[in-house]
Amino acid sequence: MINLVLFGPPGAGKGTQSEKLIQKYGFVHISTGDLFRWHTKNETPLGKRIKEIMNSGALVPDEITIAMLKEELDKNPHAKGFLFDGFPRTVPQAESLDTFMKGNGTAIHYIIALDVTEDEVRTRIAKRRTMENRVDDEEEKLNKRITEYFTKTIHVLPFYEQQGRLHTVHGIGSVDEIFLNICKIIAQRYYS
Ligand code: AMP
Image (cartoon, rainbow, N blue to C red; front, side, top):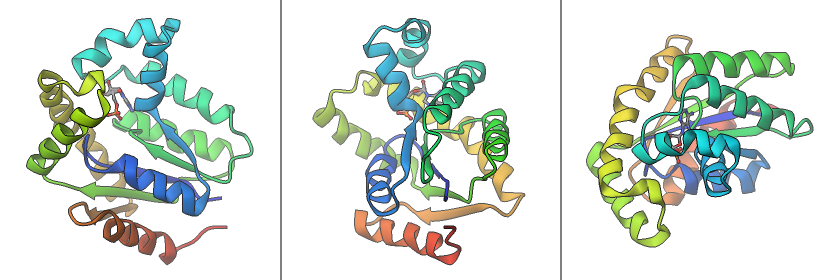
């Protein structure tokens, strides 16, 4: 079993790289952003609770996010491995993730951050907005989401770095080139 966390600001290419990694390694993909979007779209009780927060581009409180993540893990007891996309975004989320993994007799084996500049991210999101019609990607929310990444989520990286667990991949280049660099990291220490 291998478990991987993929970091990067909105628009860094996490979605694209996640798809390729899932295809290659058979991960169960856990994207908290996708899960939250599903809840708001389907107007579940959780969706109604987080709709305003999502629309503003702010982070959903840890308590709600961690509970949803745990539920998702419990739904997949036979997973070959998990790819976490958009989680953790805070240190308490990172600590909870380690605890959950340990509780299941496993660990997070790879923490990979896609290194992309703020300018590149803005350009990529603007392109995606015209293609996907994602409500939370509207212009005024974009700033908020990027700010959340660079002011909050970014602080999770030293948490992992101090433990010698963080790998950084240059996030500018072709999709295949970036994918190859991620695969090289996984190949260094492959867990079966
Ligand atoms: P994403 O598609 O990953 O950028 O997530 C879209 C939105 O979902 C974010 O702007 C947050 O409002 C919320 N969200 C997703 N993942 C998390 C998380 N780990 N912690 C808090 N909020 C999250």
